[in-house]
Length: 393
Length: 142
Image 1 (cartoon, rainbow over the protein chains, first blue to last red):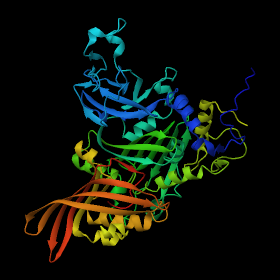
Image 2 (spheres, rainbow over the protein chains, first blue to last red; image 1 turned 135 degrees about the vertical axis):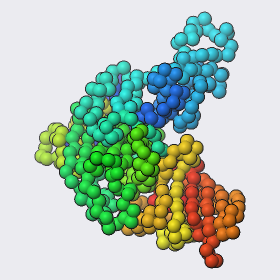
Image 3 (cartoon, rainbow over the protein chains, first blue to last red; image 1 turned 135 degrees about the horizontal axis):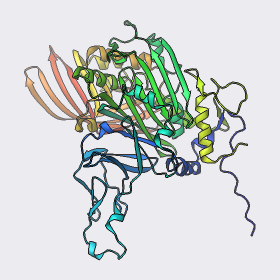
Image 4 (tube, chains in turn brown, green; image 1 turned 90 degrees about the vertical axis):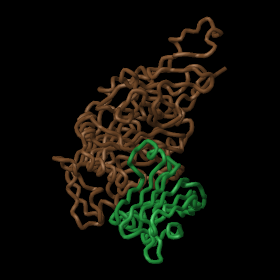
């Protein structure tokens, strides 16, 4: 029998600045992404340690479609586990955030300590001869932290986190206000009817053309930098000027920086594949995202204050977080409409093309960009193409 | 309700007392003692700014949708001669240009209503959503 070579899943366009629209809606491409990217050698941003400040505090979230559980152990270490009982695989913790003495599976009452060890299982004397309790702890994932931000990966091949995030960590510190000494003040969650790559292509980048709010406020944007890292992360940091009073807002405080001695800035670190750290004025925001399907992306916006903030500063950050960014945010709301419309448009034939900042016909994009350039995304797309093993036509 | 469903933002704002507060948050944030909300118009200035955001700043940038609020009063307690504390359930359906109706949010209002002359107005209105995850964005107040 002659077996012919299978046709390549996706033939990538010849031109460097083009991306085939089919990758935004094909189920087979999505399944391969779950394997090569979400279970592949990347790190995934899951939480800040301030979200689970006490021993026994836990948070549940997802890497791709895989449910994961983060828990602060009785030794203060934060561990990340697959959120499934080690016995028959039942989802273990169901709340988004909570506190426990231990975890108990409702199916056969197996119990696990907050370090993930199997403590007890009813009927243990009837188990198979090969059963060893130490083999049946919760399945741990590799985890590491930068400025208190917890990352994890299910891949043994991922490079150490410090190497993965090379050239971003100073900007992450800048976004958080110096270091990871934060307190958690709340979250907002939304789901968008778009592919995860449409979300990651747009959130954290979209020229100020979209943001009428900036224009109406006469908010002059000063100088800024945008660059891409070796691992396809994007850093944008723009100095903001103080917004003049008498613009479009009656209450300017939602766009003011009150933090002492700090020049207002907008700093955005977009971490491959789809995680974003945002600092805008006094708003400190981590955006965790995960695909629910090839057609749906869920985004959790987590907000923080500095742990040392006086109460009035916390209140100010809460008001700003509740009105500026997020799914109903003054300068962010219309993003959702673009995500959804990009996805509908992806069913038309051909490619999407990135233009601004991409000069000529080179097979690479510039690493250092103007602050509003879109060409940086091409470096992320090149990383994606290689990770997926798609050859160019 | 009819002001909201008619997208009459001025009419919505006029339902509030001169100094008033509108907050839309989730039950998840409330239960976890987290102060961040989805919308926090805790002053008259913020309420006016929301009118401006919806009618001017965001105009033409979002995919519009219509809403139908269905509200059921659960309790009404007179706290002072002119002040009532009212709790109500709500369900909000939304319909996009495509014509498909879906649920936008379900939750509970916690309102404080003052009566000035003949006219009842919200001193404070808290919309607490059971729907922790909203479909895309909330343009209009709930």
